[in-house]
Each structure stands twice: as structure tokens, then as C-alpha cells.
Image (cartoon, rainbow, N blue to C red):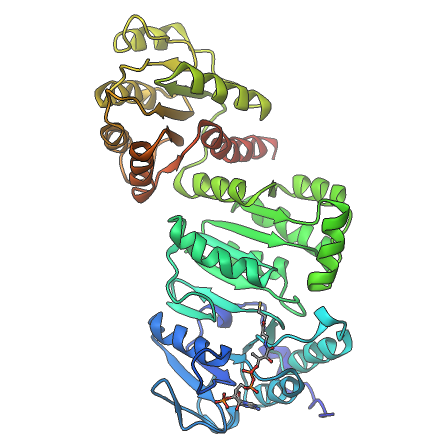
Length: 469
Ligand code: COA
């Protein structure tokens, strides 16, 4: 067993910032394999393909070079400062390598290797934390797939090599799910500012990360997939402060008894009593999503919209049926539809055909074309007393859904929106093309009315919360 050297520079070096994980000027990959397909090799490849601009140092005593980068026998032979070290060597060698990282003044370490706390080897894991603390290093993992940071063009993971940039920092406790969601966020056009596979959370945990992302300008919202917490109080305290400034959405699994059992055998963490999580999230102002779809619907709405200035919500629709469905959903989520004042009704009467309805939901009927949507939205956007809008469109044979989409985009504008709007295009291929066009233009668009209401719920509930402070 190696001796831990005295805590020489540890105190000064152990800064509270996690900057070295996200904006390192140099990265060493220890265990950078020569063999394509091995994890250490794929991490070097992803770093290369993502266009990481600073220095990459593969470390592998058996290699001369890896993917065109000169390889080093050990981290100490690099002879230049290393901000971030990624450890991808078999478990029995990790402690020794970590020690060498400390001795060469590395600031941050990601341990990809599995086989620690999650398989009951908690003493071994504690030892890794002791070693890194003694040198003032911060540690992500072990048992992680790595970190992606869009602004640094740093894909330090063995996940997909292309990840769409966006505004959400995604923290995941599950490796496989996180890897799957990396591709999914790209496919669904969400994009991420960062992804952190948090692994066993031996040192850096959810609370540390949300505090970091609070100060990160490229991050507008934070999404966490959580199975359990080691220090619930710490997360509660941090999230209460951070959520007041940046939205935090959590998917916390293990609601059911069997689910909780599955959590403890998966990552070794304790799922805890679900009700306690519910209460704590609610008190801290953290939005807890029931499903992945809901979490991403919320995130999309939050990222693409300002918060409403008030609770007054108006629905515009071309179909009575989806208008009613949306109204039901609003009531279920305790979102009141605005009682339209007479002067607003009068203005609407000037543009809505006589057979339409100017009550809320405003029903433009199946004849509603792009021009009518434009006029009605213009009226609503000009009104200070209308704080939020849900626009619904059912595909019809006579109206081109894509023209309606273009018209909404034009009338709202593609810059900062003056007020929040969520949209649903319901129907077949044409509706899909229309709402995808809106996604491309950074609108919160959905394929069903209920989801557009749910998207708006994230904003209204944050607005209500802001009024309680
Ligand atoms: N310093 C530098 N390089 C070293 C080394 C050391 N001390 N010891 C070994 N290496 C090199 C090896 O020579 C090898 O390179 P090569 O392929 O060019 O010969 C490379 O590191 C990898 O070592 P290897 O023994 O082949 O291990 P591996 O690649 O099969 O497995 C892990 C290593 C870390 C990937 C594996 O132990 C592991 O933990 N896998 C699970 C990871 C995981 O799932 N994480 C969680 C994701 S959510």
C-alpha cells in the first residue's frame, strides 16, 4: 500500500472551483489504449474529434503514440502542467496512478474504472478520496463515462462522438442511461452545455456540480438523473440557493419499493424514502419530473422562454377538442386560464371570424390559416395583461401546417421572446415537419396539446415560486 504524502499544497490547491473539469488547458488520459474499441482509446478519439483545442497527453507505457499524439510512460514524464487526468486503467492500478497524479500537481481527476463502492469495495473507494484530498485534487467517479463540455469542445467520454450543443447541463448517476440520453438529446434537438457522468460520487457530488453550473454562463438549466443521495442535507441547501436563480429539473428514480431495491443494487446508493425527496425537492424549488419525456419537455420550455410576468395564461387553438384537452390539463396542473377582459375581447372580435370563440381558449376554428394565427398572436403579444400563451394547431386538409409554423415564428420573432409561448402541432407528417421547424428556430414545440401545457407548467410554477420569495 502506498503512503500518502503530507498535505503539502493540498489546502491551497483544493479550491472550491471545479473549473479544471470543464475548462482544462491540458488533459492526460492514463490508460490510453492503442486498441480501437477499448475505452481508453475511445476517449482519446472523442477528444480529438470534438476539436478540443488544448493539450492532449496519452499515457501508456506500451505505446509510442496514440491516434497521432505522443504517448508518455507515466504522468510524471509529461513534464508539463496537467489540469485534468482521466484514469482508465484496471481497478488494482488506480490508487497508484492517482498518487502519481497528485505528485505531479494535477488539479482534477476523472476515474472511469469500475469495481469500487458499487461492488461493495467501499474502503478502496474511501482510500481514493483520501489520496485525492491529500493532494488537493477533486475527483469525479469512480465508475463514470466521463464529462462533456460544449464550450470547451471537450468530449472526454466514451459515448457518441457528436453531441449537440445546447443550454442544459445534464448530470447523470446512471452510466448506461446517460450514454443513451447523450445520443437522444442530439437526435431530439435538445442539446446540452455539459454532461457529467457522476458515477459513485465519491468526492464531487450533485450539490458541488449544481453550484458550479449556477455560475456557468453557458448553462441556462440543470437536469439531474438521480438514484440516491449520500448527503441529502447538502443537496437541499445547495439546490435551494441555485434553483432560485437557475431551474433545476430532477428525475429521481426508485419511487416504487422494487425500484428502490434496484437502485441499491445498481449504484450502491440508498434511494431513501420517496416522500421525503418529494417534500425536499418541493421546498427547495426543484422541479421533479415523473418521466424522461416530461423532464425534457420542461427543460425545452425553460430554455426557450422567459419566465412569465404574471399568471395570465391564454390558449389559442384551431380545434375545439384539443382546446378542451389543454384546458383540462391546465386545471389538473392548477394553472388558471385568464378571464379575457372586454377590451381584449373587442380587439379579438376584430380578427376572429364570427363563428369562432373569443373566450379562453380562443377557438379560431378549422379555417384558421397562417394569417389568422399571426393577427391573433399579434393582439396577444401587444397586451401587457397577457403573460403566457399556448398555441395549438390540429392538422387539417385545407391549411398548410408549415405556413402556420412560419407565421408563428415570424410574429413572435427568433430573438429573446417578450413572453413565453409553447406550441403544439398535432397530426401526421405535416404536423411533425411543422413542429420540428419550430424546434429548429428554438421554440418550445410539442406533438400533443397536453405536452405543450406541461411545458408551460414548468414556467408558471417557477413564476409562482418567485412570487413566494
Ligand atoms: N499507466 C498507463 N497505462 C496503463 C497502465 C498504467 N499504469 N496500466 C495499463 N495501462 C494500459 C494498458 O497497457 C492498456 O493499453 P494497451 O491496450 O495499448 O495495451 C490500457 O492501459 C488499458 O488497460 P487494459 O488492461 O487493457 O484494461 P481495459 O481497457 O481492458 O480495461 C477499464 C480498463 C478501466 C476500462 C476497465 O477496468 C473498467 O473498469 N471497465 C468498466 C468501465 C466502466 O464501465 N465505467 C463506468 C461507465 S458508466
